[in-house]
Amino acid sequence: MTSPLVVFDLDGTLIDTAPDLVASLNHTIAAAGLAPVGYEDLTFLVGNGAKMMIEKAFVLREKPLNAEDLPHLLERFITHYSASMPGESRPYPGLVDALERLKTSGFRLAVCTNKIESLAVTLIERLQLTHHFATITGGDTFPVRKPDARHLLGTVERAGADPRRTVMIGDSINDIMVARNAGVPSIAVPFGYSDVAVDSLGPNHVIGHFDELTPALVEGLLQRQAA
Ligand SMILES: O=C(O)COP(=O)(O)O
Ligand SMILES: [Mg+2]
Image (cartoon, rainbow, N blue to C red; front, side, top):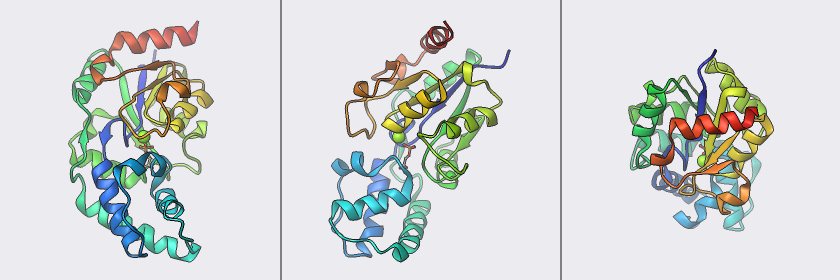
């Protein structure tokens, strides 16, 4: 039987990337004369990749964005963010122990993020977490991204796993929706960047800390799903 798989979202789930996202976004939008955003704006801004984050900053500041300016702004963001990684971004408390615990129990691990794949891969590399994951897929890895089921199913396939033996864990609506769309149980974390309380998104389970992410919890969710 193939190994069971736990798929993690990145921003706001594996890693608290807020300080660096805010810094690079502010560097980007300053070039267009926009006032800086704050941490409190992140729940509105993050979740659909860098391009959408820039577009939403313009919405927030009620300033029109010319479509032809976007590629340049995106490049400005990517250049700044790439140069500063990992910056102040750090794994959430208890994460590394949880990854080790799951692997020791025979679970395979993967990342499914709407972040640009190359940025996700580099950030995880610079935090020395790469060896934990069978695969890392981003918002530009496939023609579609979360909440489209094919992003998660493509991640499962690349990890050499089975969607019927997979659990998704994330902080935002796109994570809970992609799991539902793919027929996979979901775990939500409340410490990320959701603009609504995560239990209102209807995950199968909520954990407040990675200490609660045990092989028994994941196995229980898989068994309930199969029943
Ligand atoms: O960077 C984003 O906008 C989203 O990233 P996530 O899917 O890892 O939360
Ligand atoms: Mg997230």
